[in-house]
Amino acid sequence: MSDPALPGQSTPVVVALDEAAAERAVALARELGCELLPAGGGDWRARVVQQRPVLLVGGEGLALAQGGASRLTPVRADFADPALLHRLRHAGARSEDLARALGVGARRGLVVVDATAGWGRDSAVLAALGCEVTMIERQPVVCLLLADALARAAASGDARVRALAGRLRLLAGDARALLRGWSAAVPDAVLLDPMFPEREGSAAVRKQMRLFHGLVGDDADAGELLAAALALARHRVVVKRPRRAPPLPGPRPTHAIEGRSTRFDVYALRSYRPGPDGA
Ligand SMILES: C[S@@+](CC[C@H](N)C(=O)[O-])C[C@H]1O[C@@H](n2cnc3c(N)ncnc32)[C@H](O)[C@@H]1O
Image (cartoon, rainbow, N blue to C red; front, side, top):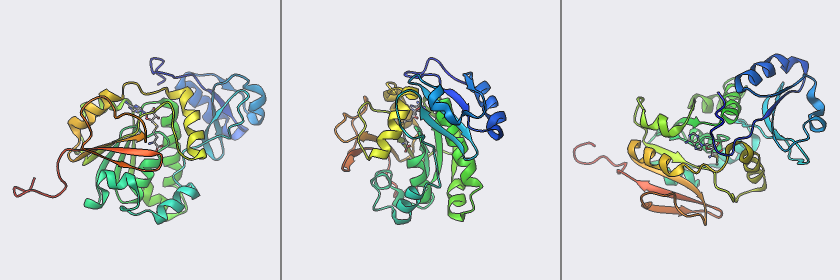
């Protein structure tokens, strides 16, 4: 499943944190074609001395860590993250720039493709606001983290988290090809949030993004992804950028919504209001 041609990708070490996780860790290491540390890897920091990504497999699911001198705490994708749930409890279609950019308030149950799913945070916000979201992720390890988070959310004791998971699905692969060959219902909107070298944002988000870099690189092909998204979406394409970053190569955005550190470039293709012919 691992694609060595992807920019910036470095191979992770898989670590089973305890005996109970050993079997799963073996299967994941085989699937990813990467090195495995034997079970009981609680002391993995002492053993993974190189600066490389570490996929931790334990009783609470999968997490991504960094080997070497870095003391970054492991990060996991989590649709039941208390901070995220708190934010979502107060989130409304009006208060979230992301939702305003996509036009979430225009219609119930907007169909959205998040073509650069990453940690799934934006997808979670959209699903919490009632959107039906298809997440696409091409980096195999990141995709595993998302699939793991989705399975945990679907089995959650919290009905809100289960409902949120019910509005999310995950596709593994390169969104450029998947959008070009799309055969499911045409999405109302496509969201893109490609990597950018100097991410701003909260300390927690910056930490997650630093961990990403070794695996993912800079998504230099994002202009092609924009072209594929513009050819597919019915109403809108939205590109999330650091506030001072240039727009992606391609057509100029119709308008932008600027937040403190983030800008949403909006490519408005067709109004959400039906025209006289019902289109
Ligand atoms: C900045 S992160 C996205 C963060 C995400 N918006 C969130 O809320 O967690 C970018 C992600 O998009 C993925 N990506 C970039 N280009 C892609 C493509 N063409 N197809 C699928 N995934 C892509 C990268 O692998 C990376 O995981």
